[in-house]
Image (cartoon, rainbow, N blue to C red; front, top):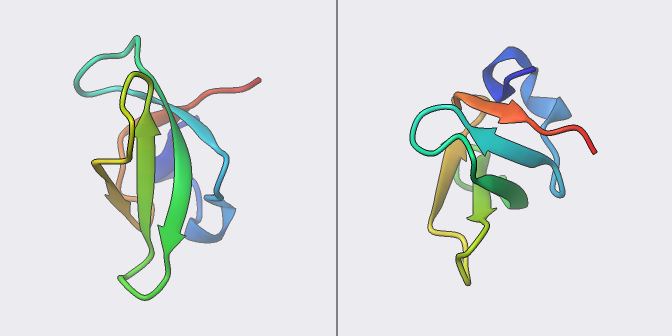
Length: 67
């Protein structure tokens, strides 16, 4: 299932995602949701030391990784 197919309230911190746009082998984790900034979800990608980006609401073409 993709993030864009979920209602915004189902997107939570700790959710693991895989990019469907750039590198589909990279896994990321939603580490923060900024409710003061139109529900911006920050993603920490494997290999990075901090989150550099994310998405607003459910506007993301990432796939949810089931564990």
